Structure formats: structure tokens, C-alpha cells
Length: 207
Ligand SMILES: [Mg+2]
Image (cartoon, rainbow, N blue to C red; front, top):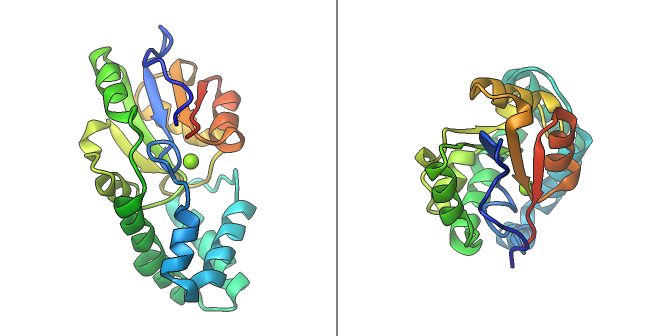
């Protein structure tokens, strides 16, 4: 169960930046479910995790540079062509994740009331996910992306958490200072470190 929340951000909070996976929903057993639903892809899934972790905190400035490097590393790890790993990622891996989230992973009970409370205070809301397919995941959870001012993934901006440029970019787009942001996430080493590096507040979520 959730361990916070007073739905009361600090007085100066003007923007809340939500992580998605493990934050807006409980991701318990998701990795295992992925493997059980596509056991033939286990090596690819393991390689994907390793590559993602090798690129943690990277900043390459734009989406195209990020995905070129990401698929280059994944193809090298699997001894496959970049085209085939890209196809696997976009057409099988991410759609499977979205489908399993919609079927099995529960939306946090705190999420909708919290969003309403923040809206009532005029606080802007952004989802910043470390993965792509963020819109599809929100829809799978029954959360309309229109509840947020912006739904964006870190790779679309050119990097991965905890690169501070990600939060600076989001804050700038929303016309607020990063000092007036509250980051809500389930990982101290990514969401928390990014918040610390940019002077934002951080709220840890644990299910
Ligand atoms: Mg997360």
C-alpha cells in the first residue's frame, strides 16, 4: 500500500512531475508477467534492461540521437540488426507491456483524488516517463492523458533519468522554475536524484 500521501504539495509547488511506471500504478510482478507471456523473448528483455541501465542518466539532447544510441547498443548486445531490435521493441515489447499494465497492474488509489486536489489548487501536472509509449500506458490504466498538461518521455527529450536537463526542460516548457517543482516517483536513484540535482522537491512512492 501507498506510504504517503498528504495531497498537499508545499505552498510554493507550481508544477508536479509524475514518474509513470511504479508510481501511477503498482508494477509488482510486471517483469515476471512479461517473461511468462513471451518466454521466447527473455534474452531480449534482459538485454533491454542492461542497455537501459548502461544509459542511465545519459543526455544526448534529442530523441533521434537517443534512440540511435539505444538501438545501437541493444543490437550489439543481441548480435542482431538495429532494424530488427527496433521492430521488436516498438511492435512487441512495448505493446505487450502496455497490454499487461492494462490487464493486471492497478492504478494507485491515490492518483485520481490527488490529481483533482492539485488541479483545484491550480498546480500544473506533467508525466515524465523513462520509457516511451507513455500515452498508451496512461490509457491502459484508464487515465486520460488530457488530465495532465504534458505527457512526455525522457527519450523523447533526449536522455534518461536522472539527467537534470530533463527536469530543466520540462520546467521551462511549463514556465516555472525547477525550484517550484515537486517530483513524485518510485526511485530515489532516478526520480529523486534528478529532483535533487535541479533544486526540486521529491516525494517517494512505495506500494
Ligand atoms: Mg518508476
